[in-house]
Amino acid sequence: MKRLSIAEELESAADRIADMSRADLQIILRRAALMLRNVAGVPLEPATADALGSIAAEMGIGSSDLIQNVLREWLETNAYLPVRTIDEESEADGSA
Image (cartoon, rainbow, N blue to C red):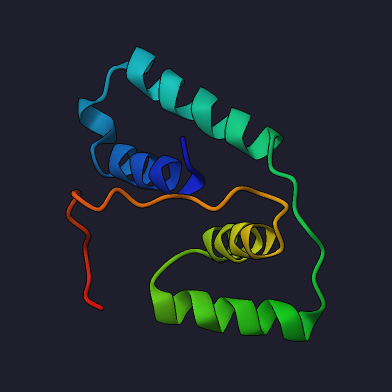
């Protein structure tokens, strides 16, 4: 489960806290705690962090997702990872 989906789940739980069962709330909090425990940050220079934050905001994604995308594409481009194949018959969002 991604951090963004956990954050959304926590926000939703906060909005309906009176309607949630104790067990459901416990599950959500345990997932959040596990996610926080497993976060491994990469220290970045302030200028780099600012640039990544600006680009991520422009693209409408989180900085972590942007870093993952850039790193994966770099690894594919430099032959450290196999290039992902796109199913030609599947529909894609967006435009070319």
